[in-house]
Length: 87
Image (cartoon, rainbow, N blue to C red; front, top):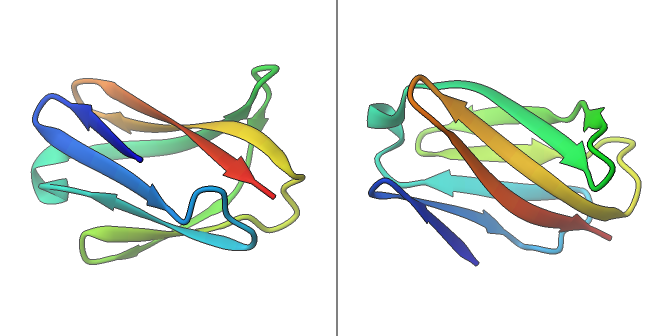
């Protein structure tokens, strides 16, 4: 689904995903992203790869176990969170 924050729309698809997913953010150039973080439901941070391609980012799950995760996109002004599922 779509996640709306401060005039921006963040979409992760497919969700759930297997090996890769796409993160799309409207007006990404205005957002000034500073970091991406991924946490499991217990709050533990996991490292995954984000590859920028224009207004989209390819998310590579690598060795990530199946489960529910919280993706956080940190900007200069706020943090946007989305629930994603790896199967």
